[in-house]
Amino acid sequence: MSGDAGGASGGSERVRDEGYDDFLDAIAADEGFYLECPEGHGSLPPRRVCPHCGATELTEVPLPARGEVETFTTVHVAAPSFADDAPYVTAVADFGGVRLTGVVRGVDPETVEGGTEVTADVGKTDTAGERVLVLRAV
Ligand SMILES: [Zn+2]
Image (cartoon, helix red, strand yellow):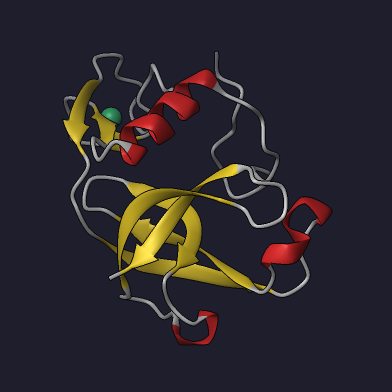
């Protein structure tokens, strides 16, 4: 399985994915983890091959408790399934070995900035009640 290109394009489609759901379950249980190859590249489930170097020996390592917002986007006009959530902020946060993309909560959308400290959590969207990865400001 190598469905997702992992690049800058696309990636906005919400495809139900068992591996990723397991990952969200682990985050929700405070047992977040990511995958690390022998070279130390981090990636997220359900990878079976390191996206950086192609290594197949991936081990699960605990997700650091905190990350830092690296880049973010404020969404004012959302897709229908997120309409009631707008405005909201999606961000990429650096958790040391790996980057997580999620919806920022616990802070005024206007005040999110690079370096904002966050923890990984799981929440539901206001609109459709879908599970999403939440980056909760600390
Ligand atoms: Zn690697």
